[in-house]
Image 1: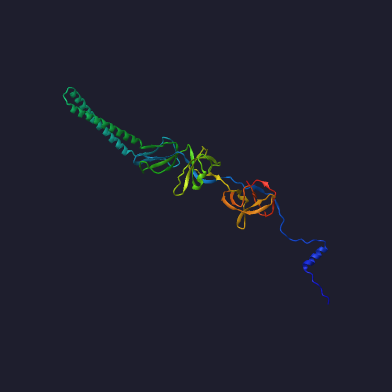
Image 2: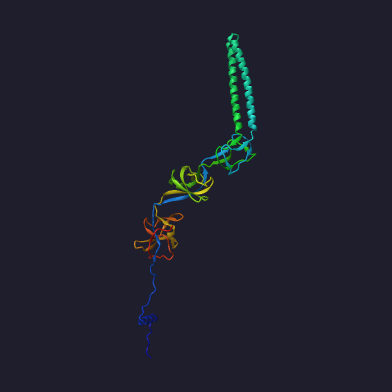
Length: 359
């Protein structure tokens, strides 16, 4: 029997294809693609800011208090009520004050009677002394008594004037045109000198008050413009830093910052807002957040070289904002990168770049 040589299947297939005039196709890596994607440059020195929450308050806030001790007879205003300058806000029971007025008045009457009696003696001894019927020592004593009673009368009148002035403090009136923002007492409560009864805010000028961290303080300067956005207003308000408190709160370690606000329709005291406080310029490249992608659990970007080919590069990221990210390592200022990615973008693909990143 004649031996038959076996030909491997692959060689047989190649021979068949060759005999038919066809070349075999070998499967390899996909060909690079060309993408029409936006490209941006990594820029440095952008102005950075931080959001600080706070409220609009009146630049003139008055704590209305009593100078008398007594029960509150009337307190008819509530929080949110508008008041006018000179409007009656609180009425204190004046019984004790009126008693002091009557007592002072009685003291004036007694001192006046004593003075008149001493004056009469002085005039009588004056005539006797002129006729040499009274000694100089007796006349001197009568004159001293007259002078002492005159001084006592003056003191009594001063006490009466003080008591009468206290009577006017029983009616407490608003010192400014404004809005009642707080009420600490009610009718029937005891009013004490110096203890606030009401708080009234004048609505002529408003200030935005916020607290910032200690690390932000070096970037905040008086006179610097600041944008403040209020939830109840459709457009932002442009304010100016008017005051910075250098002393930090011992508990929160934050600093109080006041921002003057212009007269704005619809803006009232107590409205909540957010101020965009400018920080120092950033020295690290700033890139759009949309340019980031994840590879192997790390974040990076596709860098575009001079021939418009893309290469993936891992980055070390720093501070992050709503639409921007700081690249602290892995990227140089001026390098180009793909601003808006496509999921199918791969290493070695080309970019038919159009300038500008996503808006």
